[in-house]
Image (cartoon, rainbow, N blue to C red; front, side):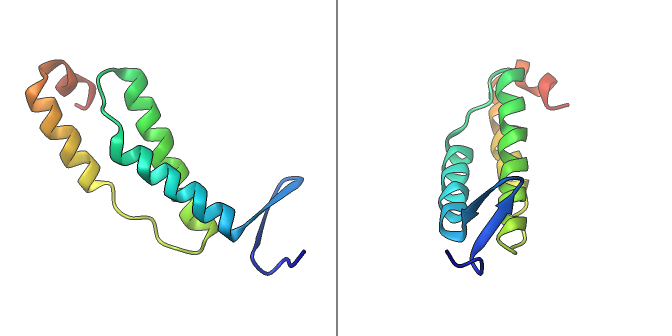
Length: 87
C-alpha cells in the first residue's frame, strides 16, 4: 500500500479518497441540517469541526461558515426560540 496518499490516524490509516468521501458526506449533512434545538446546534458544531479537520488532513482550507450562519439566522427569525440558541 502506498503511503503517499494515506492519512495515518493513531493505529489506523485512511486513504485520501476515503477522506474525500467523508468530507463529501459531512458537507451533504451540513447542507441538510436544520437547527431546532440545542442537540441540533451541537451536531452542527461537530459537523463544522469535522469538516475543518478533514480539510486540514487533505491540505485544504476549510470554507467559511458564514453561509450556514446566514441560513441559521434566517431560520431563527422565523422561530424566535432559535434566536435564543444562537445569541
